[in-house]
Image 1: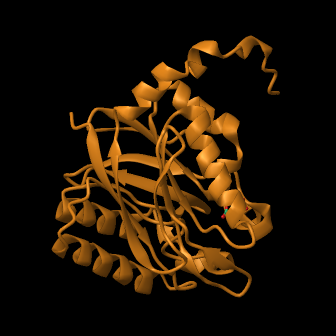
Image 2: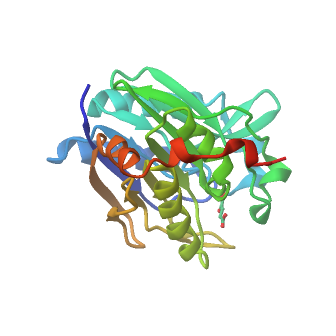
Image 3: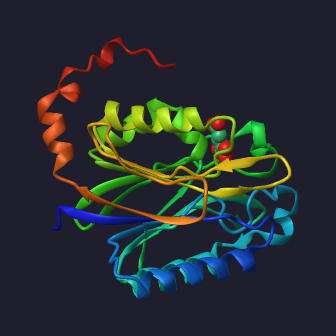
Length: 267
Ligand SMILES: O=C(O)CCC(=O)C(=O)O
């Protein structure tokens, strides 16, 4: 089991309500990555990279059972021989639409699925989307890793359940807008420090009628150090994760052993 992973974060602008155009963009980015000298072990995309926040047209444009996205992400995993944590897409199941992440192994087999559990009222998500109920925890290369979506990072108690189950990496996909870049950065760094885990977070850039998105995708180690950070432009951000560091940091400051859960009345 490899202890070192190269992560590649695809930070790009998502066209509003144009899933076919966005899928084509992802296809081209993956081809570019395959031709580059970089050999990623894991690739991450932003939130709702197929439809963007065109929530009012989801009836028309949401991906039926996520089939189109799954085919593309599985192809990407095989092409790059890399794990793919596929950002998220608008997935229709029956008459419900979810904001959903799919995860693929290096052979292109789906190994996980997570639907955003905290819907973001500031962008009307609760009017158009259904919330997930299950955690996003996966086994990749023998490592336990996890994922959440955007607004979920404001809920430390949810992410704590992941680190308590042994996850040492948290993938975050987002469409995080200004003026809250400061929140994005600080929340991600805090989640890494308090859970002593890697945080690998991919945001989009560009704008829609209501928002300008911040970019600043980030990779943070379990000590809270920023290993890589994007600007507010389209780019692929690379970072190397030495996965043994989580155990080392947990050994230095025994936060998990020192918890007093019987005193934490969360209800
Ligand atoms: O929490 C925030 O400030 C942004 C969240 C968000 O944009 C989202 O969940 O899509």
